[in-house]
Amino acid sequence: MFHTFFIQPIFNLLIFIYNLLPVKDIGIATIILVILIRLIIFPFFKKSFVVQKRMSEISPQIKEVQQKYKKDLKKQAEELQKLYKKHKINPSHTFLLFFVQIPIIIALYKVFLSGFSQEILQKEVYSFIKAPQDVNTLFIGVLNLSQKNLLFAMFVATVQFFQTKFNSKNIPQQKNFSSEREKKIFEFSQMFQKQMNFFMPLFTFFILSTLPSIIGLYWLTTNLFSFLEYFVVKKIYKKEELRTKN
Image 1 (spheres, rainbow, N blue to C red):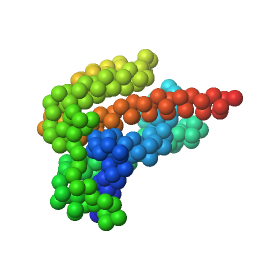
Image 2 (image 1 turned 45 degrees about the vertical axis):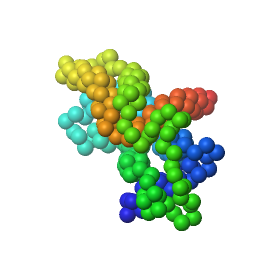
Image 3 (image 1 turned 90 degrees about the vertical axis):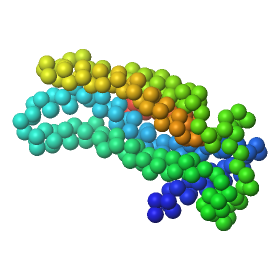
Image 4 (image 1 turned 30 degrees about the vertical axis):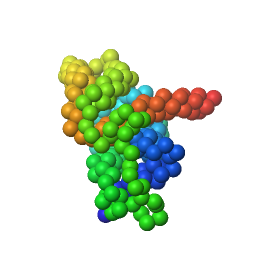
């Protein structure tokens, strides 16, 4: 069922895009596919951003409620719900983007990993879509996307390192702590975040260095487009907030 509703439709959309290109290049088709998918899930990205932004803005009030009703968890939950309702926040939206992306990421991974042999094309391409005789896997005439490439994997990992570093800088920094324990927890989370800033790019390099470069191209396009999305959504959010205040 997952193959029928996710993997095969994404594979056919990729082939459809490939067929439309004046210059046949599966790398360019992959970039267009990723952008289309990111545009489709953009509303979820925007909702997640807005919720995180508003949650950070009312974090002092959240802490106040948690502190006030720390011995009455039921009352704490009720008061937090009232606070979220007042500020029009649905905390579940922060997880919505994650759950929407999971099946898409798995499907894309399966599509790229399966390759584009004639056997796969004949088996997976819908009857109303023309199956190409041969799929050009040489991206812009330089990078063979059907093979692993250590230099390209290193490049993708480097881009992820700078993006992760940028994301960590945009996390609100807490300055006031209600207890020494809370301060230690915060310091530990900061230390953990710094370690992850280095670990994740290394992990990315390790994974991509063993896989076809087309997966690295997907990874790179997703990271760069999500980086762009951040600035677009931030600008939209500021405009909506100004409109609301006026």
